[in-house]
Image (cartoon, rainbow, N blue to C red):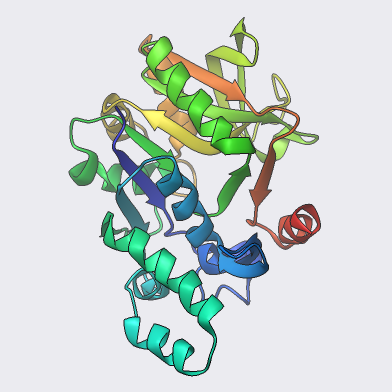
Length: 280
């Protein structure tokens, strides 16, 4: 059973400046449906947490960096504010927050600092003190998949167990694969590929199948990250560590998103606009 979740949220969000100068991009609002069925605004990270909580996860490590105090504050219940809302007859909003705080109360949440933005792989490795010798789910804080009954997570968990995998992750077909980490592999079952190659932002992509930042790893990923050299920008890329797993003959699989599943990515202003159009 996978118990632990690592959520990297330490990126600088430079592609969303100036909004992200003081506000972490993972805390930018998305349109969601509240507990009473009406539309509301939630930070992306709130929605990611609730989705994982609904799938049964209760142990979370958020990887944060400088200027990310807003994340820690948001995930610290403020019961005085709930009483204030009730005093203003805003019972619906009070209940929304109360339900969220109950989920936090029922969870173990730790915050791990990545003092220098040294890449996604480095952020993941910072969580080794939390994951230790257990497999774990890794979910980017600025990505959200919408699927019926969280089917994408169920397929990911099932494939990890069925294939006794060292790594599994989600993929989707994209129009411009040069902007993403891209995989090559052979289909072993409908929508499931055994991965033979992973390339970050390739000039000549081997496919249109791009990695979505939702993974499950065995602890061996930490050893692979330790062996991964920083790129020309001094950052340790998780895709390079994935390729190292493949080179070590580890079992790596990719699960393709289905047509009725939608990826919500707020990493750029263009994607943020797409998010609003998708949900509305």
